[in-house]
Image 1 (cartoon, helix red, strand yellow):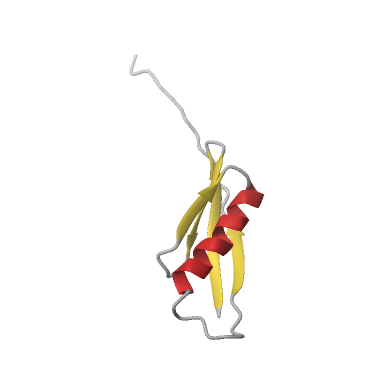
Image 2: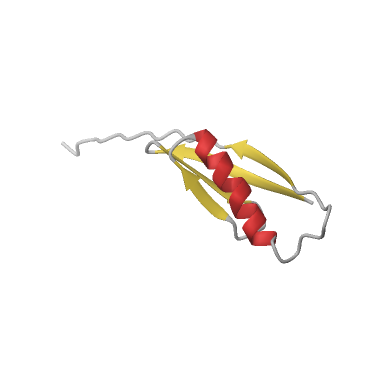
Length: 74
């Protein structure tokens, strides 16, 4: 089984959501986020995982650029 997450860093925090599944988590650092992703995935599938079954977790980082501009009507 494979679970793919989109990750993003915004306002100093990392967040992640699984594509096609209702799994969301966050972390102060990317390393903390990865730990939280692993925990969230295993909790989500804890009743469905068969002994010896493996789950592959992959992340894809989304880069966001915010452009703030103001203009005067004068």
